[in-house]
Amino acid sequence: VTSSQTPDLPPAVDAPPTGGPRRRTVLLSGLLGAGAGVASGAAMAVAAERSRPEPDPRLAAAGARVRPFRGTHQAGIVEPPPHYAAFVAFDLAEGSDRDAVRRLLTVWTDDIERLMAGRGTLTDLEPELAAVPASLTVTVGVGPGLVGLTGAEVPGWLAPLPAFPEIDRLEDAWSGGDLLLQVCADSPTTVAHAQRRLTTSVADLATVRWVQRGFREPFEGPGVPMRNLLGQVDGTVQPDVTGLDADLLWVGDDGPAWLRGGSSVVVRRIGMRLDDWDRVDRASRENAVGRRLDTGAPVTGGGIDTPPDLGATDGLGFHVVDDAAHLRRAHATAPHERFLRRPYSFDDGQGSSARSGLVFVAYQADPARQFVPVQRRLAELDLLNLWTVPVGSAVFAVLPGAAEGEVLGEAMFA
Ligand code: HEM
Image 1 (spheres, rainbow, N blue to C red):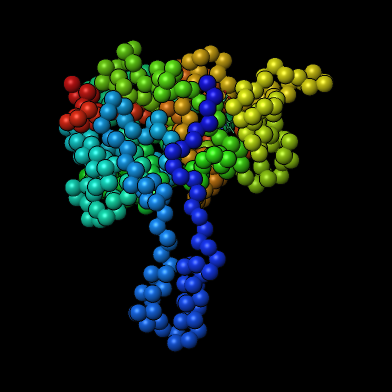
Image 2: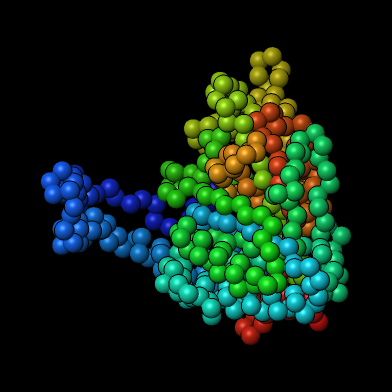
């Protein structure tokens, strides 16, 4: 199934008209600076008043939007991805036991329910920072060590992915963990606040192992697709996880009882060699994926939602979609080789080869069956590998949703 993701958010904010509030403020502060040197309090108040943006009802509605916390599944998976995210992995404190895990999940359940509703947590010193929920979702994942501590069955796939030595340059700093929080919202302030409160409220139970912050296109909407930092339209081909393909996403009766209605998430930090990418001509860059850079349509023609013609050949008999193109290599060769991709760009790395890239995030019921065969094919051959380097990798079981009155992960303690 082919679908481009269209968020239900207003896409654009109008620029202030020339001579409007912003310009007047600049003029006013310029005059003040050149004149007295020190602005009077009254003049500063006027400047602040004039520099305040005009209220935009669409932005206000987006800021007030609340996603439901309670339900069969956790939030943060099938909704259109908000613009900003933090992925935070934790290690349980040394000597943690089953009770400690239960305490932690009890605290987080309450915190997350409050934060997603636009309220501060119980111990929140700045509840005002929670007042703009901006579609906040917090999704909790657990690693094999934690599940083992509770005594619940550890599914076979809940383990590090197999090594892909052809491409992997994994660093401990971005890999593994006992717990994952995926925090997403349309305001980076909301993400930062939720991340901090959820970290501090369990500080005696778990410590941060890694944090990966990411962003998507805030103005995504009709005519403005999500593009990754290679400039490609990203996220076009997805399974229909809210319809016919739902069983690709959620753990069903064949999985451990405590995980039914849950899922799994693979988080891979993939750096991009942007300087090398810049040196490649446009045709070769389009060839690397098999899609056009401008529209995201397949190189075999049509629009963005036209399925690529993998059999098409040119006058010399070569495939139009290169044999090593990302599209051909990633395309499912069996119906179960599909998963929901929910990536975020990053542009903040320090001191490693990966300063910019993609926090690649894939949700599926069973990563060993669905994700690994595709990743293996890509590791063996994919033109994109010339410009991409995986530096982090982690796999978590995504807890089922919490029904009214339940604590997240409660079924692990049954
Ligand atoms: C930085 C790394 C990556 C970049 C820049 C990238 C980029 C892209 C782009 C531009 C497309 C075409 C548009 C679309 O359908 O979204 C695509 C498709 C796809 N990618 Fe990636 N990708 C990356 C890594 C991965 C990884 C690690 C996997 C899985 C192991 C993967 C799996 C897929 C799949 C399944 C498709 C759809 C293929 C189809 O048309 O059936 N990608 N990717």
